[in-house]
Length: 438
Ligand SMILES: Cc1cc2nc3c(=O)[nH]c(=O)nc-3n(C[C@H](O)[C@H](O)[C@H](O)COP(=O)(O)O)c2cc1C
Image (tube, rainbow, N blue to C red; front, side, top):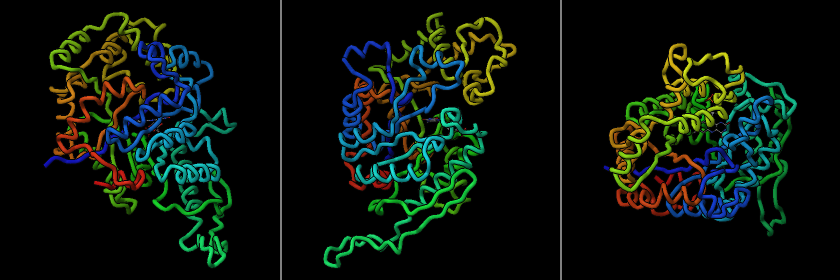
């Protein structure tokens, strides 16, 4: 039996100069113009996508390595995705939109109020991708928290926001002209929050939601991150190898974390992130993969430039033919990003070139060695994961140029719909409704 699945799109690298230097800019897309994103958001909605998530980073990162981020625009600049959201809501009717938000940047009262406003304005289609990166503390004049403390702060922040959202209990909104009464202020919860990180009073200057609170999304992959998802999230964004065993294992960990917090595991939708390269024939896919087997200097350098931005460390100045001395990475660099660069190699004995070459090499979808293939082959993979691992859905990863969206979806959407995997219509219940339609 084919399992219906949820599709999401992750606007990777955020609301920034996506695709800078790429020929598709000749289509006259301007990344600061909402029309670009509106056009793509409409197409995602027409293609049956449940939600669009917009990546973000508050900061250009470590003060001494800012140039690495901006010189090819791999890591910045970025505008605020929360303020792009209303334009996307205005262009669509069913698509959920989830900007990335970091508790470091918003006081809970401001956050509760702004998110509530967007939830009402959008017809209950707001999601919030809650991240805990701590590298932006200096911009806010606050102390830089450790990894787990940032999660503690995020939990306190979210709990406080939810208390504020719930400060208008049932019966408090009357809105009855015959009674001459709009609301009953005596029922409002004063919410006096005194915590480790925040201190504030309620109630919120808001009204109750008619179709539920904004959706909470989380992408954290650490043990603490999975615990956060189990306790708090409606949607978890997952990075894992796309095989049945890994997906089952990841799902079991989130479900267990949810159970431990007394939640129903079925209330957490888990979307696995993937960036396929879809081409028109198996021969073309084979050709692409074969051509990437021995990456030339230009390909290696391109990978090094991208990695330098993510790692806030200039790899392009290192000797590619020497082993990698891990002391080049400052304390602020993410351990997960370093691990990804090493790709399982021992840095003391492996030349940097071998690690970069591994990143540049492509693999085929049909033999599960990578993500290059035809739309049919990719649909086979999605269908298989639904059946063999009970997968909830897939998060496609890329920029949001209509050219990218078309390349990815033109063939894929009809194939998934013919197979009964992808929705053909929406239930009209906002973003929460999208996720509970099936
Ligand atoms: C699919 C996916 C999306 C992510 N999006 C963001 C993002 O937009 N901004 C960000 O700072 N970190 C992002 N992260 C990275 C971290 O997971 C995130 O900063 C987190 O709060 C720290 O998580 P950890 O539990 O993995 O250490 C993303 C990770 C994944 C797998």
